[in-house]
Amino acid sequence: MSQPSHAHDENCIFCKIAAGKIPSRRVYEDDEIFVFDDINPWAPVHFLMIPKMHIPSMAQVGPEQAALLGRMMVLAPKLALEKGCRPYPEGGFRIVTNTGAEGGQEVHHLHIHVMGGPRPWLKG
Ligand code: 5GP
Ligand code: ZN
Image (tube, rainbow, N blue to C red; front, side, top):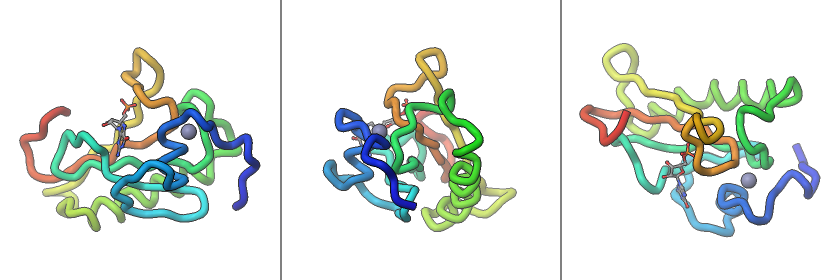
């Protein structure tokens, strides 16, 4: 799906990562979704899934994002296994989306943390 130019924020670090203007360790990419390793991982597997469109947080999503968010959720378990998470139920993974200051959000471009791998983890 093509996106209008206003769908990106030129000052946003994750828009720049999705556009390849800031390097990252890419895990997956399609027309609407970009996935990359977290630069400061909390767990042996820790990657971030973002929409290429600039959506600040979960507080801004509406029905028009339902299909995109659904696709991201369906993709998460597949990528978790590819990245080395062991299968459910012994293995598994954790999905987190921090939203707003009190939700612990630091980067204001919607992102889904996917974390997994053997414990202990640094956080979580
Ligand atoms: P938040 O606290 O907003 O939920 O999480 C932001 C996450 O983005 C953090 O886990 C942080 O390590 C990661 N992060 C911030 N800047 C960069 C970057 O430039 N590259 C990558 N790969 N991850 C980043
Ligand atoms: Zn952005």
